[in-house]
Image 1 (cartoon, rainbow, N blue to C red):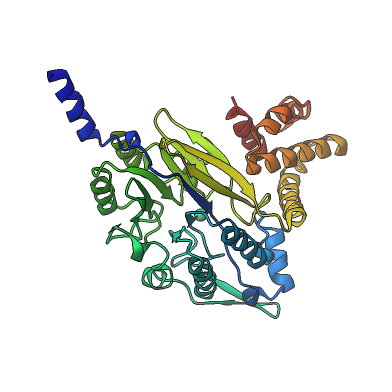
Image 2 (image 1 turned 120 degrees about the vertical axis):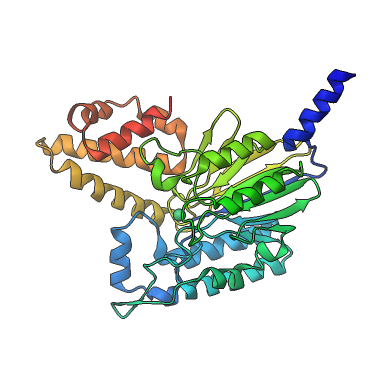
Length: 387
Ligand SMILES: [Fe+2]
């Protein structure tokens, strides 16, 4: 009897939210890092296209079309919720968020709850520009208050609990299943969970309901090479709370890389950017037994254009470094081609193909001639993490 009481007390103390059975299955669609840029904000000017051709591989000239196509597919498939995990806007332009909010209203009119959090590019981001007639002008940014006004109806205002010190909130998908959105992009504590928010998170987890957590930045490190910038700076405190209260799943974005990171107690499903090849989004299924499945899908327009953009950006960045090495053109070309291939499949989250690529002889060229370069270290970190 004493033993049973102790077990019950432990269950009550730890919350053990994952032991709660889900009565009805739920499907949640998740897109992130849309970096939406209205056509009216760039008007296909050469100056914007040139900027994107030397940027990080986003197909931002067509973000309007990609986002519309994605939202139409959401409406056709009617998931139980649509989650947008931050970096909604290209670089924090107020006008872009107004357009996004209008598009999301159409989704909600179809009975699909839309739930958003801000990313690091959305609020008071200092590079909000508009591109008109080959000229670049600063444009109105988004304050925290304006984000709440424009996006409050997408989660925060419908929450069963709100954190007053950030845009964090809990949305009850059912009595037995909560989605907890943790905002790590406040002006007060960029890239971190505020102390007040951590207190609020713990209060919610004490309720003992099954919780899936959503953040913009990653909770577990995507890459040993770039933990700073990708991961939440005080992620250890969050991981500790998740461990204490049995939160097993986090969903994040930010790195634009599709990957799954596991620790002993937590899985962080990282979804790639909706506007970077292969235009991924995630589908989360919570089953009756409370188990969770995550699968990747992709928007099915502009795939070739997105791939070409990604290849050309990767190629020019790799070539910049490889061309400083004293090697034959043939060896340089082989190294560049190989790095481009690795990067494509790394961002797509295709580990099987990466394993095959890791057996190719071009890897030895990188080991022999490029191990001290940034791209050499980068490729090494990707392939090491496959093991
Ligand atoms: Fe981000």
